[in-house]
Length: 424
Image (cartoon, rainbow, N blue to C red; front, side, top):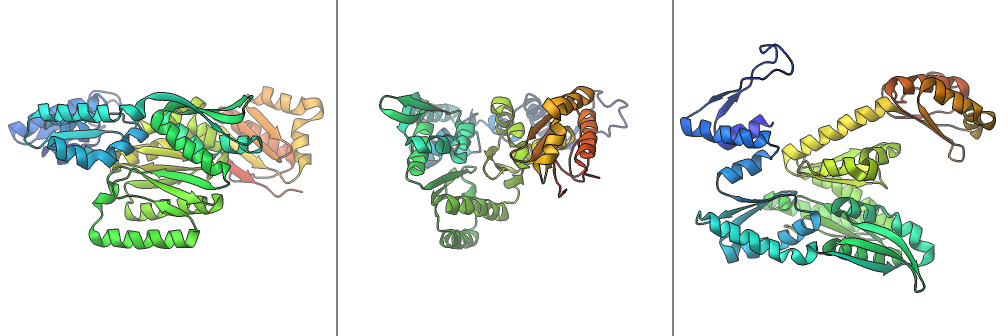
């Protein structure tokens, strides 16, 4: 629970007891509220809503009479951001957008008008939220490259879009199934890749750039112009947009996107964050069928995984960004304990771990309980499993390969999940 948000939003002081005072770690704790009778009533309502899993901002808005729209997908949010001014003018409402939610207030205080505005918004978004299927033609020699494109994968993560290779009498292509708006975005990405161009997008919290002062906005525009000139990529980012779009050569686009993340973090240090990940951990962080990534995205901030650069982009209100950052840090701490990656210098070390007919690696896995994956072509060894199992297997593998110490390895090794060794 974010105590500061509740205190700021209710005007009531919340006094939390020291855990030592109430005896047990999991015991019920008495929270004291200080304020007027009205403020305390408001604060109690807000706390109840937060305990039910809602965001403090949404809870307080609902108490004040706002109509809420929750769990809005990225495509719909982008469409809504473009139409926001129109809805506000036509329905005499104020629309406040967050990363995944919208709050609607009637300017005359009549909640019925806010409900009518919500219905109009939902009707306007029907076209892009209709599930559709479309196949985009792709030259055979580019199919594998396009289907594994990091931007297309990111779009799938953000929208639930599915993309599969399709082969028919008419030729090869990529079959897209998902929201109509997502399919349109995917078509643009695939068509650009077919032409040898790069395409990328960076999701943003709607209206974030509107928070800039005129002076800050002018400075940001200068930085943006310099980045386009320096990178050779075209960058499109509107003031009310919920994403930045990049076009140009593949390398130019990748560079411009990376630099844009740094620039946005500079201007919005609490709302924008980039977390670098060990490349070997990317699929593990995303989880099976991207379930862990979906959990991160449900925290109220945009969480976009770039598999090519092995980085996680987070954008949203400060509280949601902090929550998402902590979740990722906790996942990385667990990764460090349960994995060890070793980059060998020669294939001989890999073959030594495998043993004749696989005898050594089978014995290692059986005696330690860890899983050991050896890629002799890439000269890599990955150990995974429970912390103690990884630690034991790591020690044995280092002995077999003739490496001493093995600093930086994970599995309780202290200091990361990747160890690189020069051992000849």
